[in-house]
Image (cartoon, rainbow, N blue to C red; front, side, top):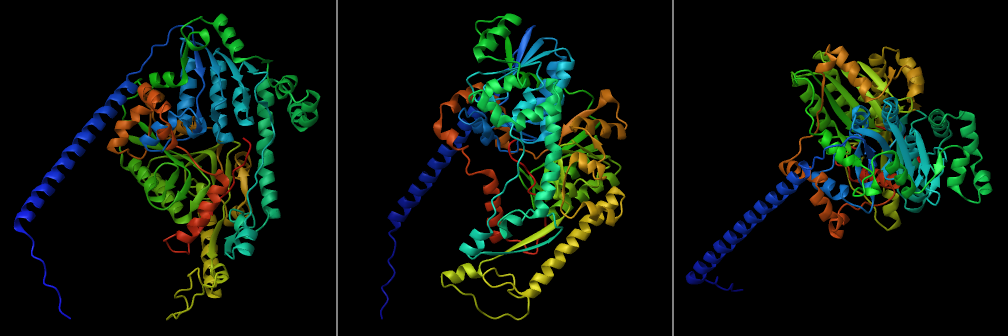
Length: 636
């Protein structure tokens, strides 16, 4: 068959086409450069407007302490996401309130002679756990001890919000608001065995050591095991009794009286004809029922009236006061630093951004502290349910390297420091925890999915040949080989021996002693201290003070420095915009931008489905031991 001769290109056409392509490329290049120049100028303008917004605080000012967002150790989102979420008026739960910022504002107000009193509004503040809430509570107690009046007002509170509001000198509840309902703590999870195995044909093989290690139970059971219920109820009862005691102490009531009011809430609310606010008043949980306008009128009469201010009284808002504090120079000459490294979130391999603890990235932060001569001691703030074993081990090794370099390392446990979260903590010179911290869960598991039955239901079958017994044995489209199961269980048992052995060495106990309190069992901070897993009760400041003392730094020379992931150039430019008034105004009017910050499904189900998806898509070796604890609770 004859092939057609290739068509020769016209040289004149080719010349003009080339000129056109060059011109088109040049046009796009110039327009892109101009666009980015304008973008950076605009962002820089917004940054300056946000950073320059410093307002002097006049005498007899009321601090309106009404932070909006979820309380977290750090805000690891990129600057643009922060900018969008922080300025969204539709859902404050998508915002973030850094715990350190909130405590800093409260402590500064206690020492500020210009602040006469504080109006505490917790309606849009979302506590994340009991330990971090206790840090806020302690700061409010210091504020009251300084002689400042604290007045709390709410349209309706959760029990976590109420624990904070109860510290006020006076607590007022809107008579027509959402009321106050103290309902207790709970821990429920969706169990998926029937749906996954019976309905879909997806089988899971669980390898673990420790009868209390319940993290993977939802994939292989239809209900919680008796051991899981026993362990969960043990530590949750401890936390709940402490909560009741905290409320009783703050409101000058007896724990028995508070508990009776909570247990008898159904009959009590019925007697008030469904009026939750009235029932709270009868139980002396609040001092009165007032509307916001009535509380503002009271503040205007007690303080300095200002008709131009919101509410009619002289005031400074939380965000503005925080901006003012950030302009203050740190104490010390910077050569005597206590570095704080935050490990918040699930522990996973590699380099991670905010919300996760990366084995590589967190190790790099600790290594930076070790190599910096100005850093004399390190506090590792841990708020993590655990994660992958090797990533946890990477971080533990860096903790030990710091100690070997002569730099004291102290761990401050936040809401949760369990399983892998304990793994990265155990080698610290001293471990501080709140009595309500959730910790322990010393145990290992591995979860391997198999989809051969699921594929068989749609007529898909796997077959072939291999040159060795293990070749292709990890293929999830084939039934699991018994030899593979033997290998995996052996790997998990070795991981458990390593875990308990390292804990025993770090905590100066025998392996048998550690095994008796391990087996995957979760403890409250108080229970963990009784069993030698925790050294002292105290928050982050207590850990910093101890670390500074061990490094022999004079109190007036201590400079606290957070070592965090370095932001990119664009993040640095955008960072000031989170507080910019101009940006706030723009984003408040932009439905599209606010939509970028929207989330998705229920967090508990989403987390478990995410883990399920990862089992099928993980590119690493399937022989992967996990030190993870699903040890949260609902209804804080």
